[in-house]
Length: 136
Image 1 (cartoon, rainbow, N blue to C red):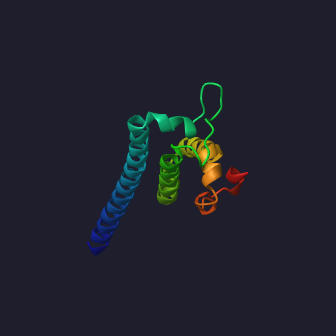
Image 2: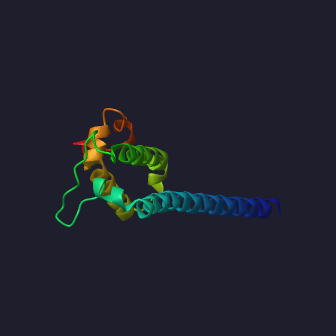
Image 3: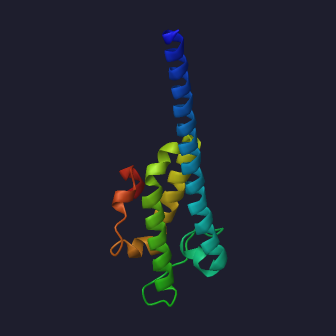
């Protein structure tokens, strides 16, 4: 009888552990998604900033320099990207392989934008990327 109770207790414990892990996975994925939805909303609210972080239909970014009036706002968005990449880094392990590949491509695209290159002296980016080849 004790053996049966022990087996039932182990099964219940494993079930609870699996549910907690699934719940943690779901929560992480939800938080990860919400951060990016918030970032998307930023570009909906400020569409004039989009061109500094995303390529146009010709595959080019809009140029920006420190003397432009949009520079400070673009720098703030660049810092927000840095913060989000830093915050979401631990959650990347919960992404599927295809999602992780897409996410790394997205990070690479953001890193290549002129405002990120200009701001790299002011903002430390290197510790965010797990794969240093993304920095090349």
